[in-house]
Image (cartoon, rainbow, N blue to C red; front, side, top):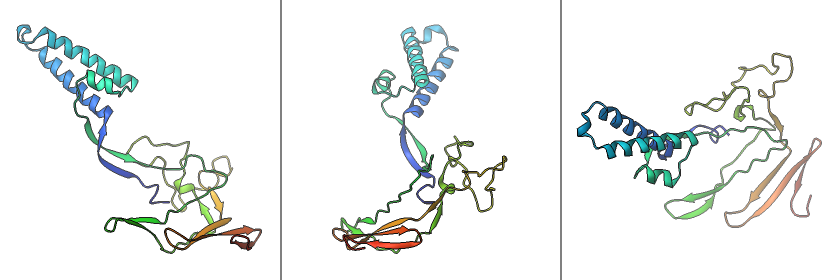
Length: 207
């Protein structure tokens, strides 16, 4: 879960808003410089075109208009590339949590898919607080996590009102497991289900 919810940094992504901001900066610099030059050295038609495009650029930024028509109007041939971040966290933990692990892996050398037979262990109790957002404290800085991740002992279980702090503990108890036996293209699924304090194995009609 920590690896799945870690911040992913993506380089050289085409950014529509960055492109508009770059265009706005170029037009603003041009108009500022043109205002310092003698009037006869700058074409009135060119000044008018620059002003119209700057106005169009501002309107597009205000309304988040990143359409193809906007870029054609502003004569933006290539979009600005920028580095982005991607971060996934759980906003509202469900009543029943189901985790599906994909054991299929692709071999780039053979061009074939195969099953990952690595062993896997999981706890009887799983606290999802470390991967759940805090609605009372959300981060908008793209370089930081959406919410701070609680460290061991960093938060108390009770809040200031003496009530259970749901942001500190989102506890799930393991109730069932579905395991696959066999290869990538064939095999058999077996379910393990807990009832009370007893675990049962279910395989087709056999319990």
